[in-house]
Image (cartoon, rainbow, N blue to C red):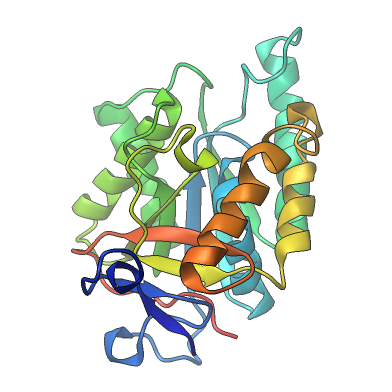
Amino acid sequence: MKSWTRRRLLQGSSMLAVGALAAPAEAEETPKNTRLKVLVAGAHPDDPESGCGGTIARYTDRDHEVAVLYLTRGEMGIKGKSHAEAAAIRTAEAKKACAILKARPLFADQIDGATEVNAVRYAAIRKIVEAEKPDVVFTHWPIDSHPDHRACSLLIYDAWLRLGRKFALYYFEVNLGGQTQCFRPTHYVDITAVGPRKRDACFAHVSQNASTGFYPKYHAKMHEYRGMESGFRLAEAFAHHEQSPPGRLPDV
């Protein structure tokens, strides 16, 4: 196991950063042979894949169950298409991406560009999360330039609070500062071996020009940068909510 201390690497303090194997043994609460239930929540089709796709692949390759929750169906995401047309196209792309990652897609059916954070929406997301009974949840970092990303993060955070703070809560980044602001990772996952699968899952979002747009522009560079931080060739970075239980990250 490679374990790293972020501030030892960057600032000389004791904040823990973990590589491919898992959180350190003394922090683990779930036995290694336990099948985990993992939920990854993103605002739009392509957000969970771009922020967490390699980690999803690592989990499913070890037979853990991963559900991917899309807050919207990307209704505003295709120029020249109606909301209904764009939603149909992007829903199909999301399902294809999930098949590549061996994950199960879920849809909360809010509207792209018009997401809401209110009592009704809190209850709806809480109901989904409660039904999934996850051990580990990943979602957007709350300080993000995109309002839908912020909404998704707050809705998941509320579910974590109201369901008794029982599951491990991690935040992922998108666009390495382009949208996600002030992100300070605590943990890293080595995605070198599954990098091609993550790329293919992102490329499934053909309507978003992933192969020539957001993936090479932001995410390929992000993987390399986080890899340099953690000592791997390619890595994804996460911030663990320190009041949530320790969650088992993917094993080798």
